[in-house]
Length: 373
Image (cartoon, rainbow, N blue to C red):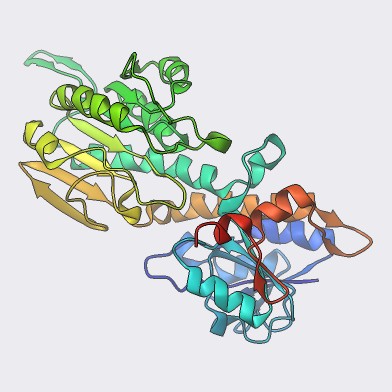
């Protein structure tokens, strides 16, 4: 069983899909590992570190590979020489990169999308969305604090008192919860909102104030698998009114709302931005999927009405070393959980296998992806 780790080719992608730690673990399972030269440099991992862990450092690691690991899905041209039926295990962006998925099928590869991992207890350690979103929520607050022209915590000095910054987190998934925790650590007054009523207790447990619409029928926020879904029109109107009055008082706003397979919902309008104080900062973590904030642009700082709007298309890549360490553990946890010693390779069960498998036998077979056509 040969496992290949490719150097990422997407613009701005500095992460890598294996670490020296996971290389050693794969070898302990009986696999051989080939890492493309320079694959880990963006994450501060030298080729020598991989070699010391037992990997083959190669210019052409895909040759003869049975499993190819990636952070983002590699181009089919980069898989030349891989074994017929080889697994492509990565974050494949199935809805946004459908043409690439079709190309995997045509080439005879079995593509496994790690972001389709079901949110069940035994798959928690395999969940790349959670591990990367956790870092994204942290980084969003740190970047907003850096861009904000004032201090976050309250400071009492002989020259007077500096008031604590007010930070509002919109969307309380993994990224939102980490954003709340980070802002609290920095000393801000934190509030948060979400369409899922179950998050109220989570918000309060972190010492933040929940901001929720009450007594409105037709809320559809409780999605399957822990994800949010679209809200009813009545709820959207009520939320917009509540948020408008609250957001005008905030110094920092972090938006994190995403709906799998859909454009990001609009949470902050231009009119709401205009109500904020000059010098305020908004970080849009959903900018790569259209953005939660009107006027946000990927990988750019936009100033509107004196408010800085920031959003990165790949926030985890700004913490490449830690993001790579967690991502590579997710991949190892996934493959090792199904490792069949007799077969010398992983053998997936139906529950997780059917969830993550996109292509098989030259066809696209994933029901979730086919249903989005």
